[in-house]
Length: 350
Image (cartoon, rainbow, N blue to C red; front, top):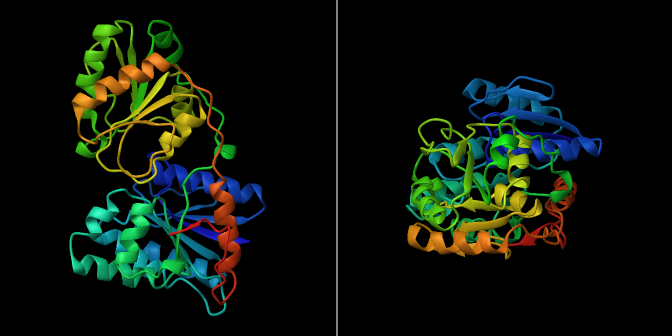
């Protein structure tokens, strides 16, 4: 199988980039020939990765991938006009008789964006028309795409995570000594802006320390070692770190906190659960049943949820869901046919 994955590639690290990198590893482990077209901020050039952020590079990369008979799989957020214009172009990346392209829409902000106007929904519907199948990472995204005119038979709901291909954790140098001085340990993946909920986390953690004076908070992501860094020795801000280091932070923590105001199906939440963390998460997007949830944007409700998670302590990893990547591999096989062949077992129908 020959595949062109189109999307963000780490670094910087984020949900889409982490998913694309994991999918590339999984495909290559099965002997697939994988090309990655990096349309993210990194604009990488490396083994099997080609920069494609500019219009010319993007068009040339798509044309070459389709001309070589590759199955084009675009990963995008679906939450702005640029995302849908990229999808409109990628949906045409197919040579006659070749594999039909596949689209995955990741962002929990996509439904609100699409509900913001008829023109937005019309563009999304036109973009999706070019793909053989459209994957949404949660039911809300799938339902909104259906309202935009995407046929239900074309939509699939597939989680962007497979526990079997987690990278081995690689602890950052500062973690062990800091960990020895604190407990319980909370951790969070943050980024600038209100969506990630850092403004809710800081006061809730400060209040938690009145009951647990040795509690510590580790944060990672853009700005956590600068503008998003909280004052005081109880906080360790690591900034942007390798994905393997982020997994090591989760594996060393008692609680993972996801206070976002919008979400799709957060890869970090599923990783934290798989690594034995209690997870406290806002009630947006898709949250696995094992999460302790609180109303999005409600800082007062976050505090008792943190207290309950600390009381419970680390947990046994949950039984894994059906492997999402197996669903994608099966869908790839369908898309290599020139006629639609949708059937059972290709992800949940929307």
